[in-house]
Structure formats: C-alpha cells, structure tokens
Image (cartoon, rainbow, N blue to C red; front, top):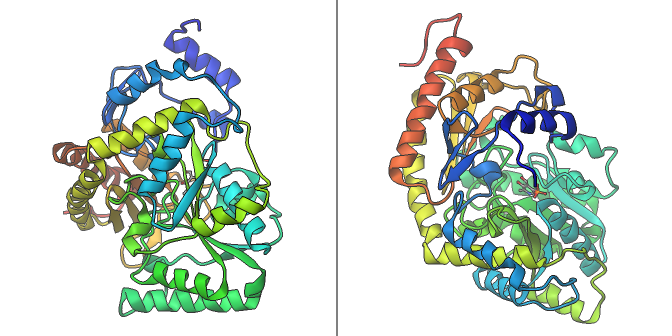
Length: 455
Ligand SMILES: Cc1ncc(COP(=O)(O)O)c(C=O)c1O
C-alpha cells in the first residue's frame, strides 16, 4: 500500500468514500494516527478519551498486545470455506457456549450484527413454521434489509414500505411515559399487559419470535423496569413464541455481565452477538441457539449461509479476545468501574439540561432536555440524522470533542461506553471534561439568552 500524507488521505476520502448515515458535505473525518488503551490521537496530535469504544465495540481497548500478537499468527492457518472444520471456529463456538446461558448449544457465525439478526429471523421462521416477528419501536438492529425492518427507530424508514409480518411494540421508557407508575414492577406489568394484548390481536399462532435488544443501546440505554424481561420470557413460553435477544452492543461484558440477559436471570431461545466478540479487531457476528433449536437442525436443513461464516481470521481473533476477557477479569472490572461511572453520572443531575442519566456497567447515556420540568428534548423524536436544523446535540458533541472526550449522540442522548479496561482515575478525568463541556454548552448555547441555571 502506498503511504499517503494526511492531506491526501482526506482528499481521497472526500472524493471516493461514502460515509454512513450522513450528508456527505457535513462529513469532516479526523484521522486516527495512534491509539493505545482508552486513548487515540488525531492528525494534529490531539489526544482523545475514547468514551464510546469507537462504535461500542472496542471493549479491550486500542492496540491490545494479545490481539496484536494473534494477528502475527494469522497466516499459519489456511483459509477454508464454511463447510470445513477449523480449530479456531470450533474453539470459539465452544468458548461462546461456555459463557452463554445454560440452555444454549450451538453457534452460527455471521459477519456482523445486522446479518446475525437477519439469520436469527430466518432460523426462527424455519424452526417455528410461523412468520410474524415482533420487535420494538425504540430499537436498532442493523442496516440490512431484514435488520432494518426489525429496527424501530427512524433508521428503519429507508427500508419502508417494510416486510409483511414485522410488527412493532413499545419499548418501556419510563422517563418519557405519561403515566407515573408507583414502581418499576407496576410499569413492567403495564407494558406486559399491552404486549399480551398485541400478541392476541396478531394471533399467537402466527408469531415466530419476539426480538429485542436485551438493553436498547443506541436508543439511549433504556434499562428495562424490574420484572419486564422475565415477563416477556413468560409470555413467549406461554404462546410458544421464540424469545430472541440482540446482544450485539450489550453483550461481552458491556453491562458488567458477560451477556446482559444475565441481569434478568432469563434464558432466551436465541441470542445474537457481534462487536465485543472480536472487539472489532476483525469483523464477526453470530447467532447462538438453544439446544432445542440446535437439535431441530439435526434433521432439518439449515437453509441459510454465508461465504465467510466462521471466517478463519475473525474466529482466531475471537478466540484471543475471549481469552483476554477471562485473563484480565474484564467482566468483573467493568462491573466495578460501572459503579464509579454511575456515581459520576449521578452528579450530573445538578445540571439544568440533564433530564436523566441511565447506567448499567459501562453502558450509559445522558439524556439532555431544554427544560427539566417539561422534559422538552433537545431534538424532537425522529429529527436525528441531519433533519434537525438547530443542531444543539451536534454543538454539544463538538464541545465534548474539543475537550478530548470522544463519543456520539442519538436523539437527545449522549452515549458513554468506554473500553472495559478503563481505570477509576481515567473515568474521573474524562467526566471532568464532560462536565466542562456541559458547563460551556449551557452557558454559551442552551441558556445563552436566559440566566445561567447551572450552579
Ligand atoms: C443492538 C445492535 N444490533 C445490531 C447492530 C448492527 O450491527 P452491525 O453494524 O455490525 O451490522 C447494532 C449496531 O450498532 C446494534 O447496536
């Protein structure tokens, strides 16, 4: 590969690359010149705290020595098509089943999150002989045609009119619910009752699966109320519907457990994964299926496949990644650091623009509002992705970047999901920067015309 200087990289990028989810003229990408641990440096030498692990995948941090070492041995195993057995594919599937809920038996490997979800839908339909798929409005499951139809938020609109049989139901979102519940359990009962009605209206015998992110991530880390996920499990069992949990973002330690479903003590029928399985060092995803589903395909053809299912490079990296989680006790560390982060986030509540903070492990969102009383969001629902002309969130994220705090926002929530290796001191340093940016944002932008409300 010829070596381009920074100016040439930017010029070629502007001329030849299409960037995701953006008006191309608004894209002014930085170049990451160097990266280590939770930090990266851009082309000007500025250092950033990577507070969203790139796109919530870099759980082990940048430039991890064990993964860099694994790459050195990649060429030693010959490439082979999915029909062949390879050491890394077999070993990684085994390692995943060892850490998955007890009812899980086998893994189908895919390339990333969206196509894993597509395959889970196909497997559910093949196994159940039913066709309807329930998923939730406040959710993101990927950008392929199938996963786009599963997704509830406005990134779904580009695949509409959607596929027949994809039904949406509401995600519990207590902060924006008009009913003031006495308890989380009461809220869970309310949403479960609504879901039960919707299942009956749609005809349970036609519903193959209920598909949900265990904890919706990009839609603002919406932690389910107590008893909700357990209740969905019960409804699925009652009606013979498969429960499929998307663990693409929440899985592999992000929430302080290996998989987020462990917080609820439930066993789904299938789980999908991607990001944290290789921490993005190589693309990989997959579907984990229960023993019952695995057994079904002993005698029935699994009518799906991918050229790169179980790709040799990615599964080798996956094996090394799972070793890192274990050797460095990263899941326990994430849980402990999650407590530190939660404490810092709690302190943000004193800011006039902080409507709610939500945090579980190192998976957190700060939801900003124009007014705490009315809860008016900074961006009206559905106005993300270049539709919002005022650009308040864009300005705030710009101020975070100026403070060396790298993350992204969705709607009115800012994601905070650093690499799981982050230390207590680093969380505090990064959150000091967050507070500095928020102080500046409130003073210079949000409340520039009114009295400064932040103490
Ligand atoms: C919960 C969830 N599912 C699926 C996806 C899609 O994954 P990918 O972009 O690898 O296709 C994402 C991406 O952020 C996600 O957060």
